[in-house]
Length: 248
Ligand SMILES: NC(=O)c1ccc[n+]([C@@H]2O[C@H](COP(=O)([O-])OP(=O)(O)OC[C@H]3O[C@@H](n4cnc5c(N)ncnc54)[C@H](OP(=O)(O)O)[C@@H]3O)[C@@H](O)[C@H]2O)c1
Image 1 (cartoon, rainbow, N blue to C red):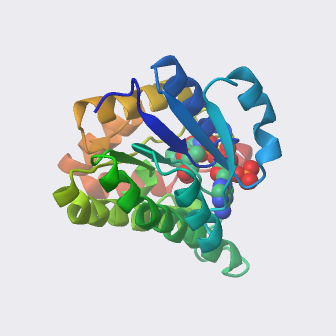
Image 2: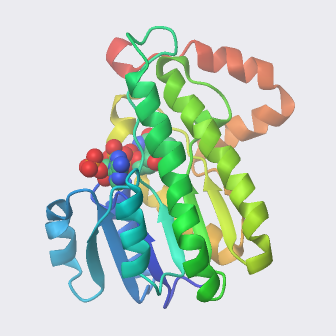
């Protein structure tokens, strides 16, 4: 589908990558962009930059009432970008308790799932459209210093495949975006190399245009995806030794 004239909704639009999605959608000709944030006040600068087409909406993707309200308030959406996510840089064993692992599952898995369920009928009504889910390369190989986040993104990847299968009949394209480290937001404390946020959103929106179901933005993610095909055990062992840059 085309980005030009699409009507998009971006979750976590106030965050690092979310703002890049809004900018890229606007520059590629989206007709309207609903910018979701838990605190819409955090969107004031973004709305001021694009007052003609950016509409702020309050949206907590873990709150069913908030998600259903968003679906009712945005009945013309053709492109849903599930960008919101959390990661706490916790090990599976090293974490003091499971509270942050539960939060990662709650936002990254249940929140994304709740958005897909609420907007599936909206997209159907508007001709099929597309869903873009921000997954991560760590969905495919666990990064132990962020082990519970990796597990939550593996769940997000699986839900992306399942939603794709269920929505195929209504013509909804469902895309998984799997970058390695992005030079923004939660990627700041990760080791180099990093892909630029501009490249991530550009590749994700190109996938919408080209109907590509999986996209690996950046050289590191592409190399890791290739290694998963040729020698997945070697990749698992290499990633197991990675440390956050703050401890390097
Ligand atoms: N940065 C990376 O290296 C990297 C790599 C691969 C994938 N990703 C994925 O890319 C996406 C964006 O990452 P980022 O680096 O831009 O993260 P970020 O700067 O931490 O931004 C995350 C955004 O998600 C929002 N959010 C968190 N919980 C939410 C909830 N319950 N409801 C609605 N919004 C919520 C945050 O809003 P608040 O301001 O209210 O907290 C914020 O706007 C995430 O899904 C992340 O997992 C990031």
